[in-house]
Image (cartoon, rainbow, N blue to C red; front, side, top):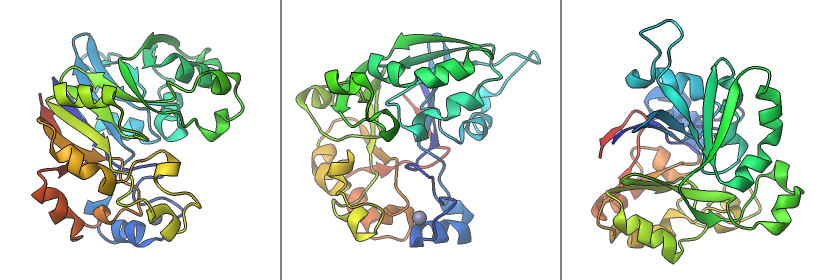
Length: 273
Ligand SMILES: [Zn+2]
C-alpha cells in the first residue's frame, strides 16, 4: 500500500497562529520544524484517500504527487476522506473540498451523525456519500460542539477510533489501549499512533488545559512507549502538540525513542507497505 504522511501536528499545528510557546516560536524561527495537522494520504484498491480532513487539506493534497489532479482539467484521483473522529481539526477540511463533484466519507455512525451540519452545508455543492470505516474504538471523548447531541448519551463507542487500513493501523488519538486494539497492532506491519503529549502533566504544566493528557483523551508517550516498543511492526508517533518536547529536533526525548526502536513521523514521509 502506498502511504504518505501529510502532517504530524495536533490541533492548531506547529506553529499555532495565536501561540508563542517555545515549540511554536521555534518553528517560526526554523521553518524546518513546522508541522501541518496530522493526516495521511493512502492509496487503496479503489482510489486515493486522505485520512482526516484538516484545515491544511488543500496544501496537503498539493504536497502529495499522486493526489494532484489530472490528466484532464477536472480529474482528481481523490476518492474520499476517512475519519478517525469528528473533532474540528480532523473534519473542517471537508468544507475546503466543496469544489469536488463527489466525495466518499468513511467514519463510524456516530461521527456521521455529528457531522450532519457539514453535510447540510455541502449539499448544494457536491455529492457526499457515507460509508463505514474499519475501526477499533479507542475513546468515548466527543467534540465540544457535540457535547449535548442525543447520540452522545446513548453511544459511548465510536467517537474516536483507530483505523485499520490494510497493513497499517492509524490511531492519532488514543485514550485507552484495549485488547482489541492490541490485537490489531500485532497484526499490522506498521502502526502510527498518538504522540500528542510526552507526559501526563504536560497540558497542565504548560497551561493549555486544567486536565491531564489522559483526561483529554490522549495517553501520553511515557505511558505507551514501552508497550509500543514490543510490537512486531514498524512504530511511529504522530499528532504532536506544540507543547511536546519532540517538536524540537535537539530534545533528548528523541534519543529515548530511538533506543526503543520507535520513530517520530515527519511531514512528507513516504512509507511503503
Ligand atoms: Zn505553541
